[in-house]
Length: 177
Image 1 (cartoon, rainbow, N blue to C red):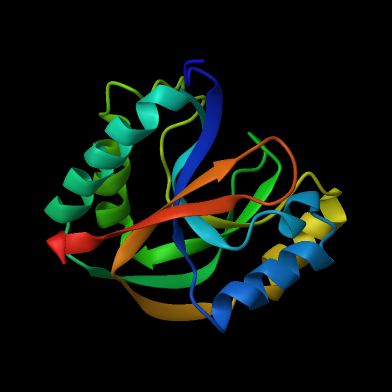
Image 2: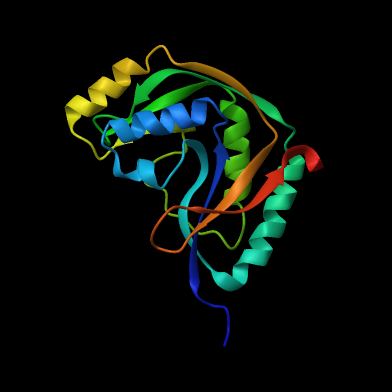
């Protein structure tokens, strides 16, 4: 039996503690159903269906992308929103945007990854979506003064079997470390 089943993958930069848990808890407090399954992160590749047989090639591609990017700093500061286009509130990146853009572009260049993007890539940390407007407003205001700086030494490939939380598959160290 061939391994041609579709697998859902995602690629992200984890938000380290204590900030990751704080942002995930704030997302849950807003009533966002994804908080239970998706810890705080900066997305590099959103949920994408790939063939199971492509995973080894994708992982080799990710090794190459990671090796080409040196470790960098992300500074999260304040909030933003995609409203009225989509009902999302996020924590913004003050530093690290271009590095995330380069990683996302490199990751998406894999012949095994096919995505029709509805919107241009914009690195951020989602803190509320699919919640009432009042909850979006409250998160926007509560985290307006949020600030966190951290070193990014790797990104992570996650997979999802259709239910429950995303599972870590593998970390990819930056700079060929």
